[in-house]
Amino acid sequence: VDRRRLVIVVALSVLGVLAVPGSAEAQVPTPPHPTCSPGPTDCRAWHNAAVVTVSWATPPAGVVPESCDPEAISADTAGTLVSCTWWNADHTEFQTTGVSAKRDATPPAIDVSPSRGPDSNGWYSRSLGVDISGGDSMSGLASCTPDRTYSGPDSGVAAVTGTCADHAGNTRSATFSF
Image (cartoon, rainbow, N blue to C red):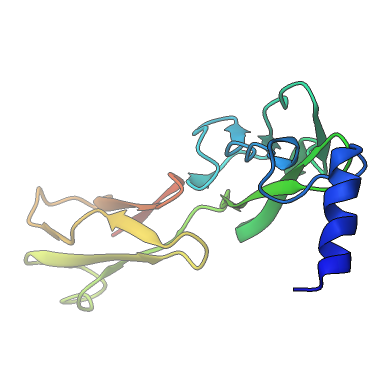
């Protein structure tokens, strides 16, 4: 340890010019995680609103915030890093909290299609399996209506509808008419 440097640091600290890491003057609380609106308020969850606003809590007295203004996210993203830094009054110590805010406002893709071709002249004369599948490249596919079997009644305007949802809560439906 360089004793001259240690003496200078201690002297500056005693004079109130420098906050020494670990001292009472240097302690800065860690900013809490932000909230998102509209909900869910947990910014780490998926959001599907047109615009998601990330907001930070007001710091306690004696703490100077930096880069803590509300931030709007209006594009689909698997994670946009948003951070806030709290400094002590003399800007010698800080704490930063960051969060990766996720937004997916695009419904999943869906395909509803017959498992086989028509029996004769474009008509299905026996039970028909209908496959329902989907995909979502942002938040991922959460669920789809299970495949279905249409067994009647006989109709010239029969239809089977399926729905898929992604992890952000977006849904899309599609119909196979026959």
